[in-house]
Length: 207
Image (cartoon, rainbow, N blue to C red):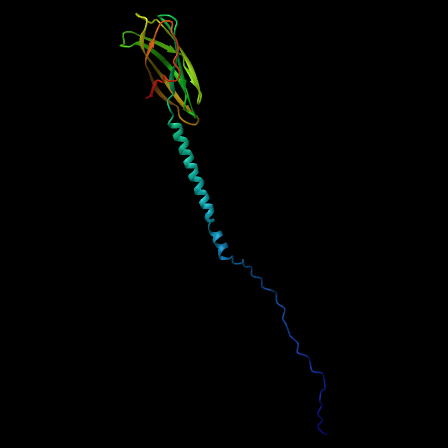
């Protein structure tokens, strides 16, 4: 038997790409922020810190000014408004009291107005009822003077006033002080009706 060679004739198989299907592996990662964003996440911006410091400084200065404005209250401005001598022993003295404080009211009590002859030969003390005075308020206080002794048609008298006052401002503690007023020497004649006016300002002291 002759050797027979069999040749398989066929179409060459194409190049197949064999792939294997495996479950995907998912790895969750956060994107890396840019450098500017990293800095904003780590600390607040500079302008926020600056704004907070400015606000704190402003509040501190406002409170300091508010406190010293209240604490450094000024004494009242007192003047002789008018003097009326009805006769030798009966006078009416009107004093003008002005509160110069914008934020503090004044309470007056234990008020005593003294009228004495120059040289202190005699003295008359006249009590006055207590009263309150609002901020920037002005009060006319009438003082009835009785029992004077005048040996002549003209007399020089020394007019003084003492009182206990309380300067009170909102949100601040009350301040009780002694008020001493010296209006100097005033010339008085019987049947005199004189409006002294704004020029006669008394010396005022708080202690």
